[in-house]
Amino acid sequence: MFPFDILQRTYTIIFPPTATKNDDAIRIGLLGASKIAPFVVVNPAKSHPDVIVAAVAARDSERAKRYAKTHGIPIVHSSYQDLIDDPSIDAIYVALPNGLHYEWALRSIRAGKHVLLEKPSCSNAIEAKQLFNHPLVTAKNAPVLLEAFHYQFHPAWQTYLSEVRKSPGSIKSVHAEFLLSPGLLGSDDIRFTYDLGGGCMMDVGTYALSIVRQILGREKVLEPVEVSYRGLPPGTDGKAKEPQIDEAIDAKYRTADSVDVHISGDLVTRGNWPSFFPASLTRRLPSFNWPKSSVTFEPVVVDSQNGEGHTPSQHFMQRTLTMRNPLIPTFYHRIDISDQHILRQGDHITKTWNETTYKTAYNWPEGDKRAAVYKDWWTTYRCQLEEFVNRVKGREGSGVWVDGKESIAQMETIDRTYEKAGLQLRPTSTFEL
Ligand SMILES: NC(=O)C1=CN([C@@H]2O[C@H](COP(=O)(O)OP(=O)(O)OC[C@H]3O[C@@H](n4cnc5c(N)ncnc54)[C@H](OP(=O)(O)O)[C@@H]3O)[C@@H](O)[C@H]2O)C=CC1
Ligand SMILES: O=C1OC[C@@H](O)[C@H](O)[C@H]1O
View 1 (cartoon, helix red, strand yellow):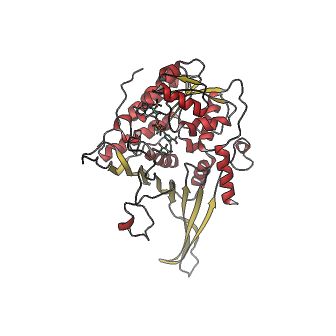
View 2: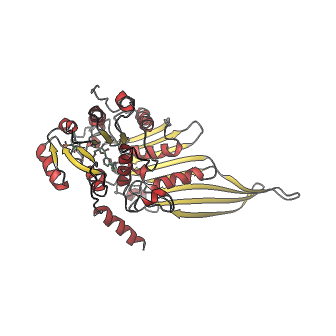
View 3: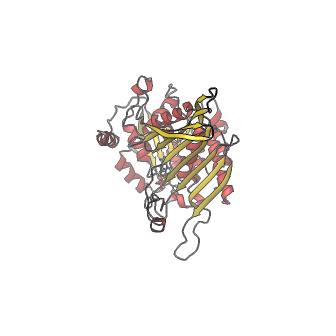
């Protein structure tokens, strides 16, 4: 039954039911013929009655035409600015290198277009503050601007967050990791160029950071206490390529209320094999790891007895909540609610045991009105598109949103992490508006 469910959802993601478009559907334009746009916008739009992917612009018009043909996009513009100035376009999807997000988001907003902006929103906190606090963005009736933290919109992530909120005990530690297998990114990938706002912290690291910040408080800036990174391997000439680029990053933070926070990201993960394989053999071997988040709570007292003449006995419970694969939950994810129980008599531990329950959430809970709208096969991107459209149309929506304050605090924490690592902040755009 379980693999059949996966197959059914996967089939429907690839071949979604096509919706008849409404007359007032939002017409989206793609800035750049990017690799990610088919997943984030083109495919999800097929099943959305209020979205038409109407145009694309690329630096090379021929490439843009080929891309448009492949994806059935009717209009091709020969420059990004032409696309933005097209009066038939309502919204822009900015999937450019991170270093260009600020400029093209602002240009789009200036043209009155709504913006779905890829993560990370900007190159650094200076840009993020200028963008999200810009009068054109904060004005009443300003266009919608959303940093595309797609995973937050999926019911699986929201279910995990609600388990965090209702768990007994205060949070002791939080961990998140996103480790990419080798071979997914070419050596000329935008992620490996400093001037384009590259780096692991800017890429998979930004998800791990966003995850821990969602758990701890979305507007909190975290202060790093220890950061280490791995740079790019030297080129064939033996010289360091792009010395400001982190290929992998590992950062620890400690909050004012003493929560230990740990994130790891890696764009080219080797090693990391289970410990029964000798590390000397596996250190250089590629490995696959699910993105993961876990939260451990302080122990709580479940029961306490101090009967006269008896040694006092206490029953403690300590919870750990783990979520595997918060980023592509539609294929597979799992929420583990693991409770460690300890019985003590005086100073002696007399018994320990574990109780673990597992949860999945491919949709909102039964009876929740959102469950009647969402579908089990919706990807995080389809959920995100639903909420982007709801905002643009002024509809109620699911209640999940990433606001400017969250995006700014995210960039401030990324900056502090780079500073602690001894790396330069990603360069600030010279574009002014
Ligand atoms: N939400 C998600 O799951 C994901 C988000 N992303 C984000 O999306 C963005 C794009 O990533 P991805 O699609 O992987 O990248 P691509 O390299 O496929 O796309 C980047 C686009 O940027 C354009 N571009 C403009 N200037 C430059 C330049 N100087 N060098 C290189 N490209 C340039 C290119 O457009 P043109 O066609 O005009 O040549 C290209 O199509 C990033 O911000 C990344 O973080 C990426 C993957 C997943
Ligand atoms: O979801 C993702 O997976 C791979 C990353 O490199 C990418 O930028 C990210 O958004």
